[in-house]
Length: 367
Image (tube, rainbow, N blue to C red):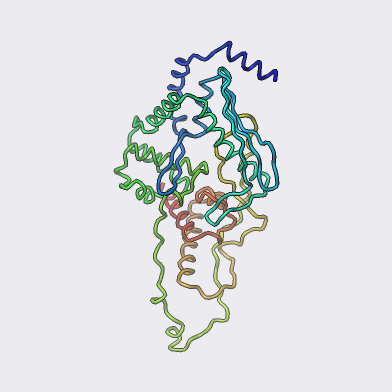
């Protein structure tokens, strides 16, 4: 209680100068390092939702001064945590706060997935807590102040003080880092790469950073490239044709399986504590203790391959060839970063996942 009284007394003794705060905010938002992390993008119901990130809110709140904000975990149960997010303006004693429940689960394409690992629970709580803190700060700060900061950051992101070719090169590098090919970007913006404008490139960079922070996935933001057509069932030769009219039922077929070597557990360092909550955490790769078979020598029993299996086998061979050429070390961590989801084994990848990785590796190889 005494600490709160001292903070409020100090806020009244050294009141903010709004003109100075506005000038400092303009300088900060004109910096590319601030503007590049100022926005998030997320697709929903066919529309692109955008807004300010926790990074921008914390930056301009610190400049505004005489504020306290943060998130607390009030109680943790087996299936959920009760959280409190608050922002407090000390000069006027204005406070915005909310309590909310965070289920220990994540929504995935295949349904809700329960999380039990302590690290995953912590990061899930911090993830959703950061969003609530962002909204509480937004309620406290004046609208004119926040809107002006957003306008300056948007102008900074779209600023073309660099040659357009250099901006395209930097944007292409950001997109490849999250597994987006040039063809996928062209399909999203509706024009060829050579015709992109600074505004187009700014949108693509915002989307790439949202994917990197885990706010969206490549599948949600971009249409995947069409896979290579495989042999149709009608064109594939039958056993009768191959044996001169006598059908043969194979008793055993040995198929060489291309599988990457086991990757070491690649996890991020534990975030530090404190009142200020960092924005959405990145992807945490999940690994198993059992090593994966050598892609060059491993074999397994399998039924005769369908056209779809044959296509998958060819694409996997191409994928592992590129992994060796580009010299990717921790392959599971690389795939998880590109696909935006945990990767336990390459055998579980879909054709769409494989094509996404191939496109990213081919871009890296061409650099």
